[in-house]
Amino acid sequence: MKVRTCGSALLVGTLLVLSAPAPGAQATYTKDIQVSVTGSAVAGTTAAFSVKIANPSSNYKTVGSADITPPFELVSPAGQGNTVKLRNLSIKPGKSLTVAITAAVPCAYSGWAKWDIDVKESKGFYGSELPTSGDPKTPVTGQCGLAFGTPPSDAAVGAVLTGNPFDPTGPPLTVAIVDGSGAPPPASPSP
Image (cartoon, rainbow, N blue to C red):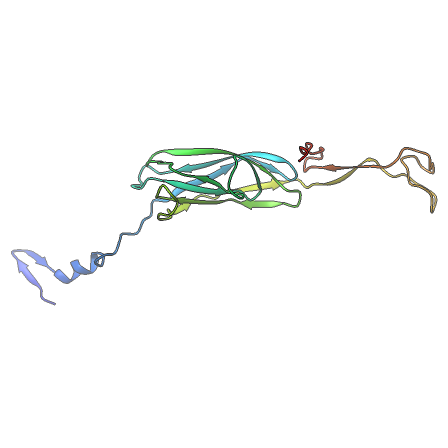
């Protein structure tokens, strides 16, 4: 390594080459797209959620497309499979987009449910994927199950169970499906 002096300045060419990126290398991209989900989920119900995609003002890229896959069965808007495919977004730095999504939360779900949100720079979803940050999760509360409308009462061995004790002619037992809040779920439309 040659060291030359120019007046009082010391020039070290090798150090400058080491600190510069290698030819053809790109700088590391660290301006993450912020993704978030709001809304509450109760097992056995249909719930409304808001998904926000925010492009920070310090970013230099434009969000062109996004795929949002909820952890529950998608009700609205209509998607392909269980995914909402957003195209030609053009979310510029400093701007955001909020999408309203309705999904059916199954009875068997409990705990935290993670959403899958993929964001890309190109307008067709074939371009480079943009890094995201945030915690797109939804807590699921409650449990679905069965509840007696008319519970069983005492009966003699081998006798018919009814709602009245030791009365085989009493009111019949009734059972209902209930959602996580203990209420009957809304009726499903007939196919």
